[in-house]
Each structure stands twice: as C-alpha cells, then as structure tokens.
Image (tube, rainbow, N blue to C red):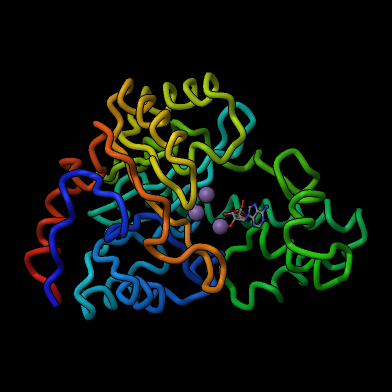
Length: 304
Ligand code: AMP
Ligand code: MN
Ligand code: MN
Ligand code: MN
C-alpha cells in the first residue's frame, strides 16, 4: 500500500505521524519490528523509532518499515543535562549515525553503564541487595540499563508497591537514584545531531514541571545551540497548553514535532494516539529541509 505524503500542516486527529517511540533496544516492551507493525495497524504512515541513547533497533525497524510500506525516520532520544535537569533531545537522523554522533552514541552507552553502577550503589543503601544483577534480570537482555529496570527490581523485591512509587521515592528527579552527572550538556548533544545531518527536537518540553519563563530559557538555549524543533504534542495534553507552547516555538522559529512516547501496549498510549494539534502557525518538523527528501522518497516508493 503506497504511503501517502504527510500533511504540510498539522491537521488534528487521527495522527498519521508519530516521531517518538521506544522498542526493546531501550526501555520499550516490543521488538522494533513489532513497533512498526503496530504503527501500521494504527494508521501511522510516518514514524521515528527513538530509543534512549541508542540506534541499535533501527536496522530491524527499517527492514520492517520497508516491508510494510511505512516511512521510517531513523532516530534516537539522547539523555542530556541542562541546569541540573535531565533533558531529553530527540535526534531525527535521515542519514543514520555519522560524524560526531558515532562517538556520541558510544559515550552515551558508556555513561549508561557507569551510571547503572552508581544507581545500584544508591539502591543497595536502601535495601536492594545485588541491585545491578536484579536490574539486569528485569531487563531480560544485555541492552544498556535504565531507571525503569531498577524500578521493576524495587517492586519485585517488595520494597515499593509499584513503578510509580519507585520513581516517586527513589528514582525520580532529585531522588537518590537520579544520577545525571554522566550525561553531556544539552548543547553538546544537539551538536552531535547537527553534525550527523539530523534535526534536533527538544523532547516533551511540558513534562519537566518548569514555569513558562524557565521553559522559555530552555527553548532559548536549545535554539542557540542549533536545535531546530520541539515536541508540540507529546502524549496527552490540554489544547490551550499546546497553543501557548506553539507561541513559544514561533518566537524562536522552531518547527513542531508530535510523538506518543510509546513504550508498551496496554497503557494509555499507542502509536499515533496523542492529543490533536490545534491549528497554529508552527510548521511540522517533517517539512524541515533536512527531512523533506527522505519523507518524499518514502511517500513515493513504498517497499523500496
Ligand atoms: P533513564 O532513561 O534510565 O533515565 O530512565 C528514564 C525513563 O524512565 C523514561 O524514559 C520513562 O520511560 C521512565 N519513567 C520516568 N519517570 C517515570 C515514572 N514516574 N513512572 C514510570 N516510568 C517512568
Ligand atoms: Mn523511556
Ligand atoms: Mn523522554
Ligand atoms: Mn521517550
């Protein structure tokens, strides 16, 4: 089935574009090919797989996307730090990993490894013996560990009743298991993405509990570093909030992206199931010159 070209403007629901999703290459539940299949089932025709700090799932996703006639933009979601806050930057990478991003991704894997040892030390102090081995068991593979693996280990050991409590008490922002020191600064991660010929997208800017003013400072620094876009809609959000964010993007000439941040089936999010984007003057990120070529090719030659 030919992939229809994505709209030149945001057109509300349903979403045929979802540019933020996870697979088993990071903390998602489905293998890359199954994420692609689910996208197809949900009517998503242009997708990006954006696993945390890795592009290990892209090859499998690309093969599946070709087979199913879906447009796939290779991506990743980089962990960074900005003013002591853990900020995520999605890289949309039509040319795959190259340039400074290659060493950048290797550094992220090493940072995750080092960080996992420090998180384990912290959690052992609150009674999770052999924390690293338990988190590895939860991950169920050799992929780099993330905080969700430690959260599940805390639940399995009976130290907290659920994942939400694990983050609230031990792993969330400012808690003992929230180790940020290993991540690069925001501007560094943006530079890696630019050097790879990609588009840097500030992920879920509304999800950090920032005041409007501080969010503006974040967007200022991101744009000054060369970042080109921000997620206008991530998952579910109030349309008035979206309009206000669109204003902040327009002031800085940033493109807008949309993503579900899908991690696993059965939750409240599925590929393409985000809030609608109200009509605003913010241009969709897939019209950015660095992506337009790949998007047009995907639309013209499905299965190629
Ligand atoms: P990490 O990439 O290791 O820093 O872990 C961050 C990941 O943990 C996010 O991408 C989410 O998937 C997950 N996460 C963060 N906060 C929560 C929460 N409160 N409840 C459940 N999962 C969360
Ligand atoms: Mn995640
Ligand atoms: Mn994120
Ligand atoms: Mn994400």
